[in-house]
Length: 317
Image 1: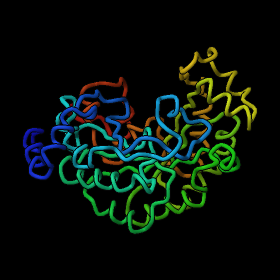
Image 2 (image 1 turned 90 degrees about the vertical axis):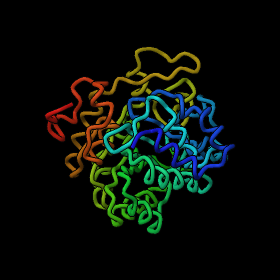
Image 3 (image 1 turned 45 degrees about the horizontal axis):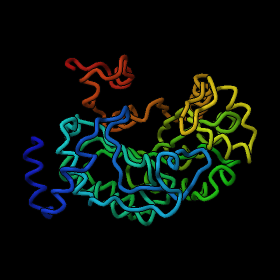
Image 4 (image 1 turned 30 degrees about the vertical axis):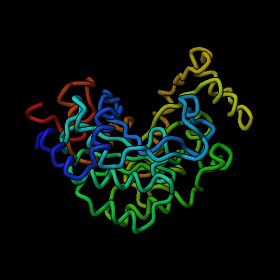
């Protein structure tokens, strides 16, 4: 069904005021990122993890605020975006970049969007979370026809209370993985960012714990730092291994990725030894979970996409 036809169906549901706002919303204008279209169900995250940079992007570490559009409004905004392609073979969707989507203040908006996406979009949809998802909510998501790729963040076991002092404990995240798995979804552990001297050392333990609770895969990624992040981390750990991997000191407000190819290789090997399928890119995990070649693949946005090896090169691209 075309974007126009889908918009017409949503216009039967939405109030005129929300239609007006959705057409002018940034979801209706933005180009996709490498992981697809990042969906904001809210702003801010009270977890305030020491390695997080959303505060320097203008988002709060205090009380999160639900997005002003409803979940159906966000779906409508996407359908007004000329870059967005609906459907299982369309654009990838990712939720959780500047907020915690399953925080009690945001979960209603998240579920609204998932149900709207299930009804009108059906795009491969990925979310990342540290929050608890109970059996009821896991079952509700599993009942959708929408291909959902859950990522549960665990980057440390030993230093979780130090690096993530306000985030849910390890036991909560493992139980979330278990609930999602028991409901029929295929959860993955989100091992991002890889913190030198921490995550690489604990990777096998992280993988074994996640696998034993039902995780089928893992997504890994490099640490990005700012001056403020380095300052926060320096108060609780030795940041020497991080500084040695930077090409230079970050400028004020600048994010820099550390040199971490060897770290990713080491973590990948440890997670694979724990029995997990490992992905270097979140977008690939999302597409693999849906068993599809998304729109970005057909547009050749990335050279040598790993989906060729995972799904086999399609006869037509």
